[in-house]
Length: 364
View 1: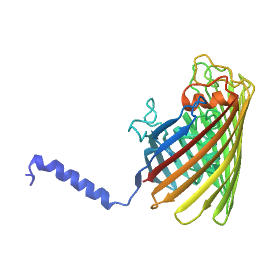
View 2 (view 1 turned 180 degrees about the vertical axis):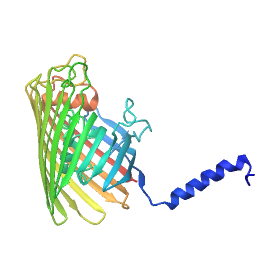
View 3 (view 1 turned 180 degrees about the horizontal axis):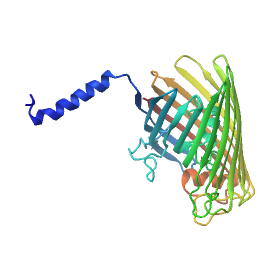
């Protein structure tokens, strides 16, 4: 006869299994991580109609998120890996993307000396290479108003690729990425398809990056292409940055370009200051982004200055203050006001928007 009655037997068996598992060598690891960032922001002339806006933004420096990443040792130097990452709107507690829960990342793959091959929703090469050279606040960027979003945030091709296969490899000082996104359109492997590649070189004080991404429309009517070239050099407590991104649309022949230079300096062990200047241009048939019938905006340009002061209270928590000013001309006025104010201002040839933001960021 068993010494324990059935009601006690199952909990004891489960406890024994748990003890046995904890005594065995660790073969797998799962990490909960995230970033909580929010700020109070004031924007002067947000819509080019002299209306101002005060708000609590859901992400200030860096996009707020919560995620799980894990790995399992498969032996022979190989591992299984996965990441699931969900964006959070800290101002309301809502999902950052109501349509997609694991909106930031969701992939599984294999990793070894030969590199990493992963499948799912993943960052494209443009994001993983070019974002390393954002001058503002040690590459975190101003999530709510970063000048690289000028022109409607087109320079990173949406940042992430659904239905994608990504290969990454580190060869000495060079990190490589190749990515392919299935279009999943009936009757054609090309419609909706994405292709990307990038290389990041980092050796001592010098870093250089180059990346390319193309995205075909679901209808097959056109292809969007983006190119990026950037670099940085550290001398003492200061790092200098420079970069250029170009976006081309074959169907409309629209052209958008942005170039920037910037500096970041560690003033004290806790205090970091960064600043940058950006020059943006749009040419040919640039239209509005979100209207059912696109409105032609045409050529335009913009210049932006931005600075971020970040004070670390600890390794995980910091306070930050940012200031940004954008001078817009011609068609760039409509593109920018539609993106930030929700409606494209037309008939306005010049406009200046100024914003300031103070917030707190905690990573875990």
